[in-house]
Length: 191
Image 1 (cartoon, one colour):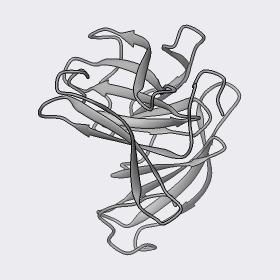
Image 2 (cartoon, helix red, strand yellow):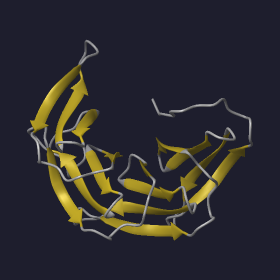
Image 3 (cartoon, rainbow, N blue to C red):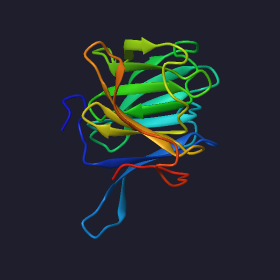
Image 4 (spheres, helix red, strand yellow):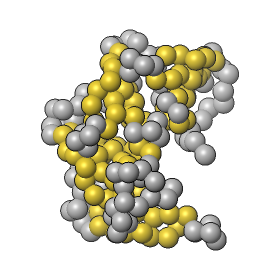
């Protein structure tokens, strides 16, 4: 259990973008989802992306106004806010991926830039490192693999790469696989 979270057990978060309600649930021994806590309409902000950070923590992002928030699963099974960051705080990110250890990767598919950050003591995201336009390939899917590693995939040319977070907060390439290596996949997920 993460010391910042009062309750956590491989939970999932469910969010309704229309009415801004949410729920936390977990997998039971009989393979079903049980609800731990529900939060009604208007509880959450207007978020376009939500990603798990590990240890029961979650990052919320609004691509339109570039604001964000970090929360955690509380003892009552609901999401409690750790920190909020207002409009214009973040860049224009198309993909946000958690590494499972409180760190997060931000990627802009249009200009192929990126940044790595972590949850600071004040519950907000602090930047560890940035990589400018053109640094990365044209990736349509990015999946956090845990332990500071990520898988990058291009659905159009079916190429891929694996990278890791370096000590200076940047992504370094571990290996690449060229065009045509993979099938045409519309969704990529970790297990």
